[in-house]
Length: 423
Image 1 (cartoon, rainbow, N blue to C red):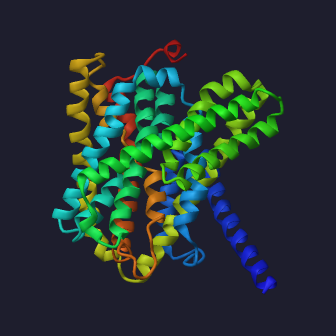
Image 2: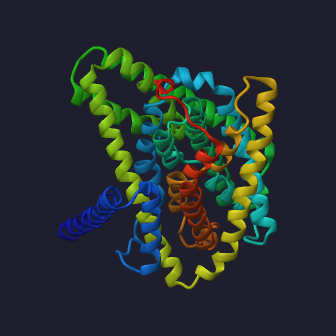
C-alpha cells in the first residue's frame, strides 16, 4: 500500500515537472524567436495540447481544490503585492465602478446572451459562465504599455480594475455555483439573497485579510531575516484564504487585502531592501509557474472533451460567447466612462477605447473553468464540456486577437507619455 502511494506521488510530481518543462521551453522560444507576449504563447500551447492529444491523463485530479486552495491564493496575493495603495485610491471611483458595476453588467449581458442564444438551457448556468469569463487579466496589455510608454494613470485604472474584479467575479461565481449545486437548483436564486450573501462574504473577507496583513507586517518589524519574512508572506497568502473560507467568508478578497497590506505597509515599514527583492522575486516566480501550468492543464482537460466528441457541441456557444464578450464590455465601459467624466475627474476620451479593448481574459477564467465540478451527478457536470470549450475559446480570442492588436491601437490613438511621467 505504501509502495503504491509512493508511486502515485512520484508519478504526480513527474507529470507536473514535465508540464513545467514545456512552459519553460515556450518561454525560451518566446524570448529568442518571437515578440509574442508570454501569456499569448501559453494560450496557443494550451490549444495545441488540446487538439494534438499529447500529454498525460489527469482525470483523477481534483481540480476544484487544486485550483482554489493551491493556485489561486498566490496569484491573487502577487497581484495585490505590487499595487500602490495611494495610486489606487487616486483612481478609486473608476476602478470600483468598472470592477463592481461594470462586472455585474457584463456578467448579466453575457449570461443573458448565452442563455437566450441557446448555448445552455439554464439561466443560472449561463450566469455562472458570465461570472467566469468577466474577470480581466491585464498582464499582456501592461507589458505592451511598458514598451509603448503609456500613461501611468491609465495603467493603474486597468490594473486596479483587474485586481478588484478578480475578487468580485470569483465571489459572484461561487455564489451562483452554490445556487446551482444546491438541493433546489434554480429555485434557490433570489436577487436579495444573492446580494446579502455577497455583502457578507465580501465584507468579512475584507476584514479578515486586513487584520491578518496588519498582524503579519507588525510581526515582521520585530526581526530582520529575508528568508523568514518571505516564508511568512507565503503563510499569509494561503492563511488569509483558508481562514476566510473556513468562516464562510471570501478567501479571494481576504487574500487581496492581505497582499495590499503587506505590499504597501509591510514593505515600507517592516522590510529591508534585500527582503523586498526576495519577496517580489519569489512571488513573481510562483505567478509564472502557476500561470504556465493553468494554460497547459486547460489544454489537457479539453482533450477529454475532444475525445468524447463534445467539441462540436461547444462551437456555437463559443461564437455566442465571443459576441457576448465584445458587446458586454462595450456596454460596461463606454457609458460608465462617460458618466465618470461628467461627475468626476476628466480623463482623455480616447482612453475609453483602450479600456474596452484592453479587457483581456486570462488566468482567472481558466482557473475557474478547471475548478468546475466534474463528479457524476453534479448539476453542472452535464454543462461542463460546453463551458470548457466556450470559456477557453473566449480566452484564446481575447489574448490572441485583442492582445496582439493592442499595440497598433495605442499607436493609432497616439497614447504615450514622456518617460518622466512614469516615475
